[in-house]
Length: 450
Image (cartoon, rainbow, N blue to C red; front, side):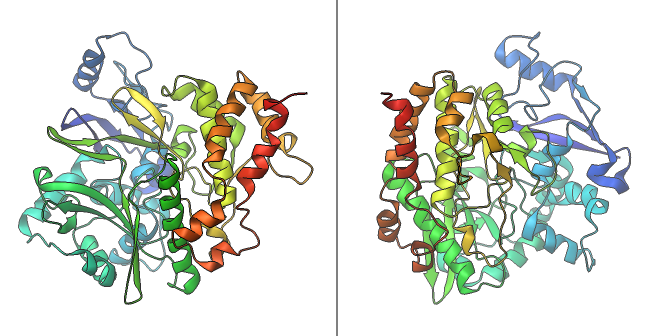
């Protein structure tokens, strides 16, 4: 059994190649293979003017571990992490499991069906052709439903059910398919909202990812979402590379976090769908919650990222994000909460996202990505001076770049309070909001050697 993987660039969807499931009942565990379509590879290589190129991994490639080349056949599970990125996940997957009549998730046994029917339009620029065509047929038979912003907040459960009635289950490399319920919405030029894919591209003014409280919607669940909103607003104020324009709605106790999507860009010539690939996929890892080593991640990033060209600037960016996670109490640092974004021919770190005070979550979220012991200080915290000395080309120059970014994060508690962070976050003993200042002091050994 096979499925066609499509990639969007130059304002159209392209049939990139075929996924063969040798054992469909085993799903992603059944060693599916992927082969680029010859005509597709020719078009992609012609676009860069080099038919002998062997490492084309920009947005025209399926992934950084599957370069687009002539006779590009990948027979050793290389496609599996990519499929894990885009298959319906989290709350969306749970709805699918329920709609298919299962009491419990049958896991890999329904992977093929979820891809064939539910992989309509994940975050990024990939999709499964068969799922998209079935969805388009369903939309053509249905009346388009438009709603206002208040309805999104107050009727969230109904809208999510409506989304699933159209077989829209959210997947995507950025964690958009995580545990909290979410909707991928588009806003038209009249300020009305619809599910992505239900109105024509030319009617779209903006793209949104809307998050609702996870779990049982307790006070803790709401505080996590409220704190996340405050983080993005503080970061925008400070000019940090994150998600500008985030907004938190609270209507009669119903809450929603509105996040403008960085993988979509509305232009006069059409909608750009930027490629997105998770760090898990980049590292060839499949399972959620799988443990990663920061050092290995950094070295792989340095091989894949083309912008900035300065590897020390990339390292500094990555390290400051690590500090930011500590400062905001975000223990949920798994490999789908950091991604690559592929714009044109460039590959960059995607803007910082999913930065929430997860220490407030009653489910006790554990960290997934760790520094090795020899790069920790006596209190078992990262020693960023040691990290720079081991990983930077020029440790002092990298420390200087870090210093500039850390200064944007100073006085964080006052900044978050100004943007409405809940007291539970501001006063939590495990949230070290002074971490940017402490790391800045730590770097003085490199910046100002005696």
